Length: 311
Image 1: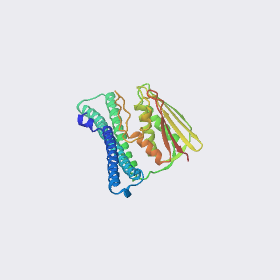
Image 2 (image 1 turned 180 degrees about the vertical axis):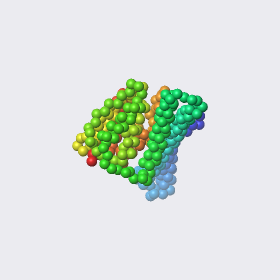
Image 3 (image 1 turned 135 degrees about the vertical axis):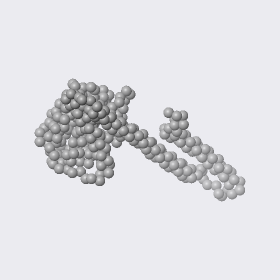
Image 4 (image 1 turned 90 degrees about the horizontal axis):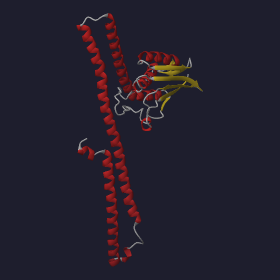
């Protein structure tokens, strides 16, 4: 980091401003008391009837209140500046990550197509290439859908097409798809009460499930162990997805649903855009539901729980 950036870091700026205002207040009090004494001496000498009783505290208090209000305004400006600076940094990281997420599968597809064009491959090898390209295409499709969904949720120009949906069936279908994509040794166990119906947009609910599973798999070790449980209680559908991943610290629990926020640790290079959990939170909020995350700390996994009123 350059020296001038260290000097003008937001925290240093706030500390500097605080020190400057403390100095101003001290000198103002000193100046005010001095002038007040001079005025009293002149009044005592020339016009004793102008002398009041005691110190003029109301004027002193008014000045201090004005200084406090100015200081409060400076603090509000600093908080806003700090938030905007953090958002700008996250947006830059987001653009870089999206660029990488787009280029990687495209480069893979191009490489496989060029190989197919230049060589005569046996059927087994050709089938493997086709499967890889389909997986890369699915990855691009997922990324584009997330980008479009995030934009739609921000603006909400298109209303959600909610209808009666069998959440149990939707979950079972998603679990089967995710099992096919698990690395060797990975496992997803499912405990689901059948026939739980909710009023949601099936496309949006499918994206909620996809993002939760994607998050659980990406942040789990080489062999993810994911437990899924769907139950109904007192008119509420409750779905929990528990993983054996890296877990979260307390400070991360508060921000994990923020747009562009990504959990990062030294040595980790997990792909993603920081939109998945934001999409989950926004969709659940818009459908009258809720989502929470629990974790006992780093290395102890996470449990995401979503709730929705049943139909």
